[in-house]
Image 1 (cartoon, rainbow, N blue to C red):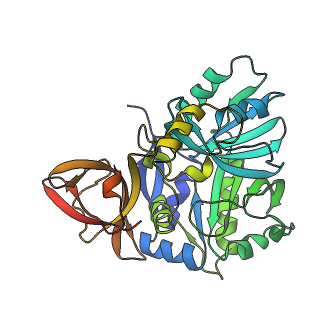
Image 2 (image 1 turned 90 degrees about the horizontal axis):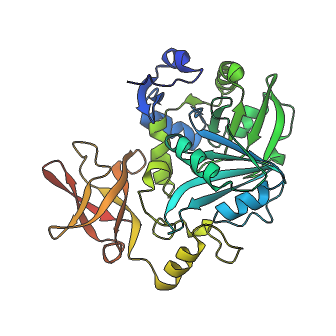
Image 3 (image 1 turned 180 degrees about the horizontal axis):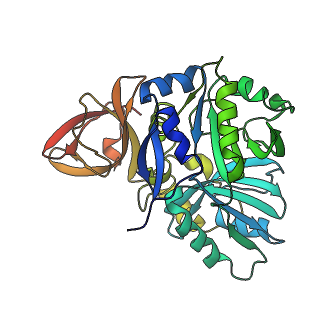
Length: 359
């Protein structure tokens, strides 16, 4: 059995009460003080996440722009240097391979971040699509670590540790070679929690110093270390699109509610023809957000959605919401069951859990 991978902060987690779980072959902190307290911190103050497990792939060379433009669903023609963009990569038949955050370092140098469980698959996909393009595709996931500082107090806290004016970094913008407490970072105003914040890319040897420095700097503001469990709850509560494992196999952007990341007017890209046809004909199933009144007795991701005894969909994810004090989830269901207020049932071991479509 392959040993779990660990970030350079693994031995630090215990100092902060971290409870370790397994995600895509990594040993990572699921929570520290607890999901509810961490949720409050991110929503009202700030939370610091170690997301070093996130995959990072660099694409550079004179054909980098054309190579990427043919692979992604969004149009990167007008993407400026030092700007980032969320976009998708799809199979020729239109299903989503991955949602990626694309950073433009220059016309010939880009960085993409991908779900940790998909790094090898995405890297192989990129290599297979290289053909005669003059590009280098480099998996730098093990060379660069990553922290996410999220919450309304993030800017105030981080400003204590750097001389650059953080107000100049707008949402989906980034700066390279930023000095934060003496370490060199790539700093982007990005995140997937529904709050303002920053993602910090840093060398492994500097990670512990940066982690401790940010937590010390944010004491007055009430910062807390945060685990990955609360990140999922924050995304669900903020109505952010499905991400990572929530993008079920063979789901299309339109079914997943990701059409904002698809530009059918741009030049040809992999999957465009299939997506154009689906756009014209319409979808037959759809990702919905649901809430359950009862706490499920076991993990229900992947469980069947039932209506009148028939399977009408599948659960993509489900988490407890500290805000609503209920369990919220995403499910892919047949279109006729996607209307607001529809009552559905979810198979939970030998029980059926009642749920309501709320979005």
